[in-house]
Amino acid sequence: MKKRVVAYARVSSKSRSQAHSLEFQKNYWNEKLSTDPDYEYLGLFYDHGISGKTMKKRPSFMQMINKALDGEIDIIFTKSVQRFARNTEELLDIVHQLRDIGVSIIFEKENINTLEITSDLFLTVAAVVAEEDLNRYSANVTWSINESYKRGEPISFGGRIYGFNVGKKCELTINPKEAKVVVKIFEMYANGYSLTDIQKHLEKEGIPSSYGNLRWARNTISEMLKNEKYIGDVLLHKSYNRDGIKHKNLHNEVDQYYVTNHHKPIISKELWDKVQAVFARKYVGSTKGIYQKTYPFTGLIECSCCHKNFAHKMNHSSNENAYPWYRCSSTRDKCTSSAIRDDILEELFIEAFNEFVTQKYRGIEEDDLFKQVTDLEEQEKELTKLYSNGWILQEAYAKEVTDIRSKIESLNSEIIGLRNRNITNKDYKPITVFDPTKVEKFIKKCVMKKDTLEFHFYNGVIISKKVINRRIYHYVN
Image (cartoon, rainbow, N blue to C red; front, side):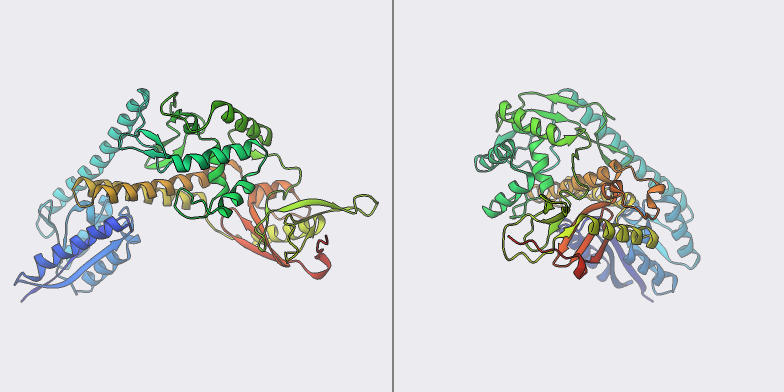
């Protein structure tokens, strides 16, 4: 009687390169098992784009195990212990459950059959060796990076640098077309243009961003204006890894190294100093970058009609009936967004904030962001292994790694943003009086959609409040 057999494969990334790896594994097991006269090959179970740290988070894996426990599978084939499980305790638990009902797991690389008496010993050793290899690899990489930094030699720049072409050995050469845009950005900011003004200018001119699209983020422009590479220098160790998690090196947790005249600059030192002086005037605390705002909602209210920020104004400022309000800064007559008085805005915020804390809305928290970073780090390791084994081409590998590192950088920026807000449990209590510190700590932005105001909280939660008729004040030119 033929044995009912399946195979299991896992790749950690949903990238195109790893899709090729999965296709390779499908063909491999199909050829190996479907042609064996002793087997009835039931197919391949695989998890795509999921970390292998815990079995229970892999749906296809759990489906396969449940089928085996239900008596539908006799043998499970897999390439290696590392592909099957990375947690020794979970691995042995599954092996024992399946062994008790006569189902075997065959690890091809280690030549282990779990029905054999000595398999537990070999499995434990294989799992420990795999974990040690990963730890040793991580330690070696960290040491190598530190030594290179001490010599002033960059290992990588973590992704694309607008205005430069990055060589294989981290040499930076100027990209003439993009360099002109970089100079324009620095000149505009030095001459008083805001980040939003620059963003709108770039998008209006149809200038592609570093990602190749026509959308520019204010944060991207801000980071460019503070990037020392544009004056020919390089600051090494801006981030570091600890326990598999990437952190920004904000407080010199690890030694940093500043290399001057590393490459040809795009902008002059004089222009750089002017831009940094503008930042110094606008921001309190260079490490946190907290904007000096005269009013709590300055720079936070966005018009859904014109996509401009609301400006703070004083209505009837020349008489005793004067009152403060916010309105769209656009001069377009067709803008349909409502203006809103300060006192009404504060009332709506109190309502939204109290709903937020009493309903205990949960969105993206720091732990969630850390998990995403960890998963991306795992994907990068998997890509490196595939590339080392010759399963993907260098061009595909470089592109995928660049994309992953860019995402990690963005996620770490969000984590730092969460930490800098210093939220404690006391902050999650309802309020009866408007508290501007709650706006700073909890609100990422507000969006005015005609006569509805959306409060966007930092953790991703959005609460909408209707601006009723008595609260609508249209601006009249």
